[in-house]
Length: 115
Image 1: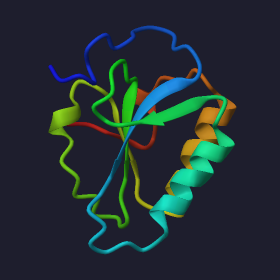
Image 2 (image 1 turned 90 degrees about the vertical axis):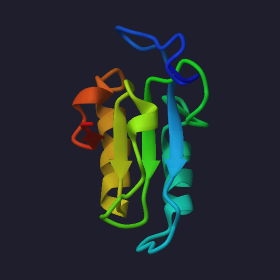
Image 3 (image 1 turned 120 degrees about the horizontal axis):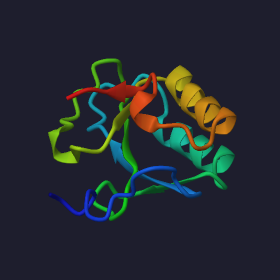
């Protein structure tokens, strides 16, 4: 078990939600990943705190990939839900999902990855 799973909360989450942030390697970006993360932080500042994926008590890990391939390895983040942002549209969906239902189960998100 890595640090991200130690003390992971279960049940209803308190705000702001603690979500790990992992960027892809950036080999073929099709949009400005950093700008999208800044937009997420700006629009969800009261609901989400983005932290290192190694931080303790994370609820999920958000992978921000520059292209649809999203080749970031996710095994290190198990058993946490892994969410993928592969476009500006995905970033907007993440913001809208959290805004509309701040305590939603991230494992059930349309951006989540299984395995």
